[in-house]
Image 1 (cartoon, rainbow, N blue to C red):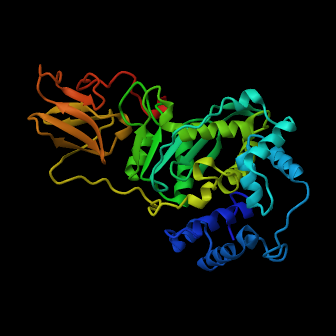
Image 2 (image 1 turned 135 degrees about the horizontal axis):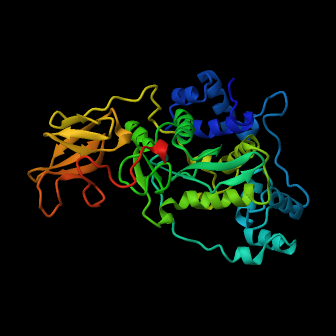
Image 3 (image 1 turned 120 degrees about the horizontal axis):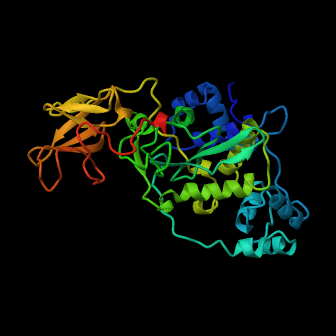
Amino acid sequence: MPFQEMSIMSVKLEFALQAIQEETNMEELCERYEISRTTGYKYRSRFLVGGIDGLQERSRRPSSSPSRTPPGVEELVIEIRQEHPAWGGRKIKRRLEDKGHEGIPCPSTITEILRRNGMIDPLEAAKHAPWKRFEREEPTELLQMDFKGHFPTGSGRCHPLTVIDDCSRFLIVLEACPNEQTDTVQGCLTKAFRRYGLPSEMTMDNGSPWRNPSSDALTRLEVWLLRLGVDVKNSGERHPQTLGKDERLHRTLKAEVLRGRFFNDLRECQKAFDEWRDVYNNERPHEALQLGVPAQRFVPSGRGFPKRLPEIEYSGNDFVRKVQSAGIIHFQGKKYWAGRSLQGLPVAVRPTLLNGVYDVYFCRRNISLINQHPGSPMGEPGCCPRSGQPPYGADVPPPGEAPRSEL
């Protein structure tokens, strides 16, 4: 059985939590986890009957055990806090209940136990305050992606890449990357999409490698995502709240994994990341989920990752043009800039309600506007980015635009 990427038990639990969702397609889910349907239904049945204990190997642990109240409640609280130094009273209470302990005190009492034992920093506690949350209604409707600030290891720097589901807070990707380049990100996303399916939309900030701040031209990563049918959005300038859930994840990652630790290499980083990702998705109570865990709410996408990129198709009423090596298209005897990342790919020139003005589309994304009227209020003839920047000319690329490999 090829459960290999994380520990066998953590992957079994992740599979089981998805398998019990009503919307889950078991045949597709088993295929993504590379197990037979017989094995998949076996673990689903065992989990429904015995919870996580039902997923244990039968030869090593019984399928069930009587629930009993352990002695020393204070010792149990301190033990969980030492294991997860960033957890507060509500999370510790929920975790102890999830582990089968009875007679657990209320969160305020647990907080007093922590304070009495010198395990709460008053200055750090004062920083935390509730805030209003916004989220999508269904899993995989929107994924947030960003790099956590890189840090040194014994053999270079680690650039943690994170991708989190907006609805369920399920941590889809936590990868220790050697750099922040397009090929590295695309490889991580490919592995995630094969397991969890394609999202409807992804949002990132305006930094490399998903966006070139000096140009509206598409990056190679955006082109790849658009061809997969994934809408791409970017956060507003100096508006980190757009990626609030991912930013909050980074703060938790720093507190629970990175702070005070040194790693020899990326492999050691990834081992720690995999262990914590299992805790974050399957064990750690999440306050935004009413102290449930992300894996209980997450359902994989119904759109599987294709073996080949789909063909690009446009309406019969469009003027379809192939982007040339210099990043230009030819239309009605003139050259217009489209971007070097689209080299060799077709774009659609689509008439608007204004005579001589055309929208330029790549897949479903409106990437620019062609204005053929010199001296009009819309500017000189040329191809203008949709952001409203000044039009840039027929043969000259916009300032700062370059292929992603050169950035």
